[in-house]
Length: 304
Image (cartoon, rainbow, N blue to C red; front, side, top):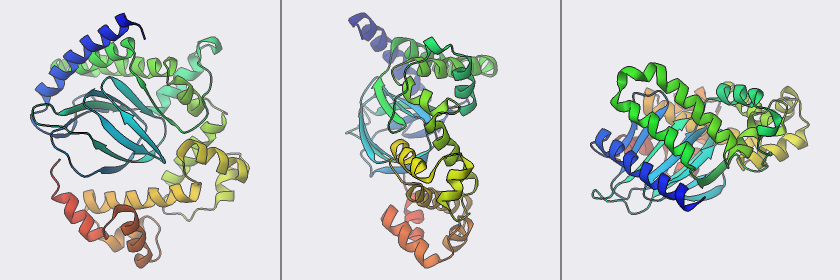
């Protein structure tokens, strides 16, 4: 990136900070009036946050964030963008935020259909080379991308324009990601017939059939891969084997059912396919550090 590009990004950053601070009175994660766009503000050091995140692009506006996405650790600083092209378990914490200088970021969920459509529309010479490896990347945000992010954020002050302009800018942001430094990963994930795209299909099947016992040979057959190829590419993209991924997916979904739909632990366990509540409690505590009831009670009383 040239000095001129860095100056452009810094100037855009100042405007984004002003918008986020004005639209967020206090700490938290705030869904905005723009569908899919979320604003984040943190003012104190809290314990790490766990979630099973959908594909997204996140831009750090102020501060530093450490994230473990899948099995890899990422350190993301101001004016960097994290792109996660697959549904992934993540653990993250922010570094030394204060009320005077809060951590600020925004993120938007990636639309799989937009990515697939754009890849099909792009000419071969305009596509970046495939990038093998885990479906997550961190890179400096480029000026064009930041300018589009700013235009999207500015719509928060023009609510009447959101229904028409937001979808156009969102599509533009998806395109800029595809042709930018992180585009190779997204190309590999969303090009029909590519091996990593078959992994995306396998993940979609796991999510739609979360309570069904996993037979890896059946999953491989349904996405037209051999068992060994599915294992290899699945672990390359997510950091986990299909069985490990499926277990985490079930535990996070059970946590969501208890937290947002007030399900009892036993009912949540059965809903995601556990036959033994004792086994569910044991595996839940191993992942989240506390038994289900205690963990959910703590989370309901947690203030960001």
